[in-house]
Length: 292
Image (tube, rainbow, N blue to C red):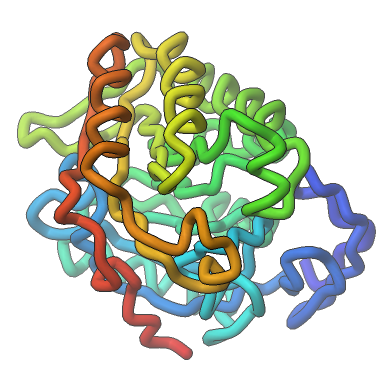
């Protein structure tokens, strides 16, 4: 737990040397997590947030480097409070005591070994959500079988050219698809309680990017093949943040024409799930990172 040599947790397999507090890999993470926010979160999908909120734990560091990242304050450099195993369990227990519907692990992959060690000894009485960019190794996701109840991956791109340009990853589609298949294998069709809160399943998110509607159409075509096993969350909240101003084509919000084109294609598929309205765009979706 204190040292990991040649880390291969994510598809980059960058063979990072990691000690307790830092590492020289792409995500720059150490083996013990730095956490930027722990609090009930009310801006997830309705079946995740419900009325009492999702117990969100925002880890710092990320396996991607999205130029439009709304959480760039914590994704580019590991910041926040370091948590021991005992402290982490106590934080989860505190969230559960507040009535949250689940424990929502946001960008957990760099700390997979730590998290697996935690939930080997601690089993909350609410579902565990694995909230991810989608860029995952099947081998890592497989280790969470029997622990994670709900997978909440992004599927950002249908073009590896765009994935490389906007997220510094040249092999996104292959790895995101393989990971998604494994998530579906583990969880199967969505299951809800009597109040409509998700207990098990897979929700796939896709953020519509301006000037890239063909990318969205391609993603919808890919995901339509899994329409009987997943729910789709089609997101229109894009706001040009981080270094998006260096890319003129995405340095703006969606137009109504772009949004309508995405919807037109969506309605030709068998996908079911959640749809954001255009009014959802705005910086209010950037969380308050209260542990920095």
